[in-house]
Image (tube, rainbow, N blue to C red; front, side, top):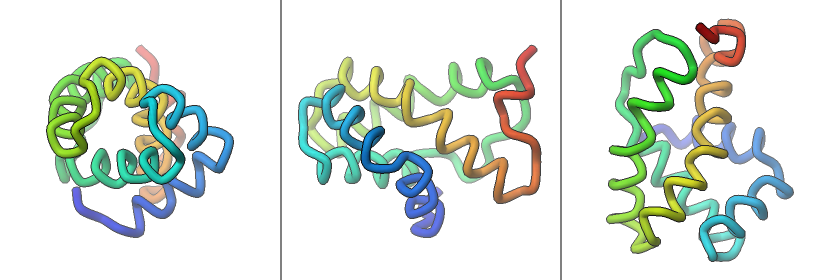
Amino acid sequence: MSDESLQREVLAELGDDRIQELAGELGTDAEGARTVVGTTVAALPSTLGDGTLAGVLGRLTEPTAETVSRQTGLPLASVTRALELLLPVVLSVIAKRRGSPSPSTHRG
């Protein structure tokens, strides 16, 4: 899902505080966390499909974490924890783009 505008929107939605939180989870600096955001957005499938937030996150986390870990060289466990923070923000930005309610309202 290589989309630079989506990456910018996700970074804006995260803000500096959550970027620092991601950096802490990853054991890197803010720039490294931003790189993980970009790599994560690029690693996501172009169509995420419908479903509950938990279901979507469950299907995306493992394969996305493996791709991000491989491409960044960061430990898989750290990337997986960071994605638990990052993926809900990515999905929220995508929902806003589509004019849909936030994915958090689709719990099942």
